[in-house]
Length: 198
Ligand SMILES: [Zn+2]
Image (spheres, protein in one colour):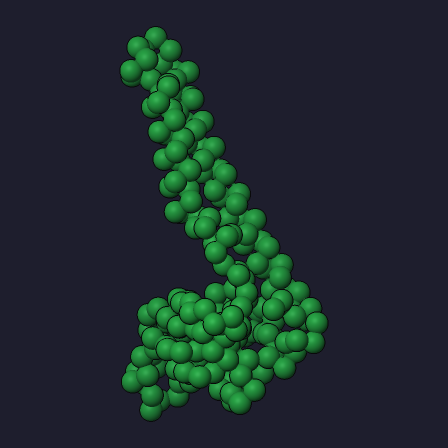
């Protein structure tokens, strides 16, 4: 499942994020390694055990790579992929403000992670976690079909029976009616009706 052609800005957004993450990782590693080389250069008269040479340098480079992978979440390049599936379980608090206007978000603002357990078309069970936003308890329901797009945090409800509004795949803004542009982040909204027309 690919991002619809209509939502070119989302494809660009994912590419830009990938590129920034990669550049950040490379800069981080380069900074630490160059720092060590500079230290060695500045302390040439020191004995080897006080300089970053041999195994010390090797450990330093490994530590730089390892911390860079953690900070810039490099594993996402390999583990994140687009998929469709059915929600088996949602970790959404439904009690919160259920009687108030959930889409309006005027009177409350809470930040918890939403955790969806999804049975994919291949039969695998996978978990997606993303920041919870107002209106999600109307939008993500057990039994609904959703599509997750690689690089975009918020999956789209693609269930033909769903009538729970629309969510922006980039910022998670929930709106009852479909608009071309997300009012919060100005990215285009993915229209579930457009999916599969590529
Ligand atoms: Zn948005």
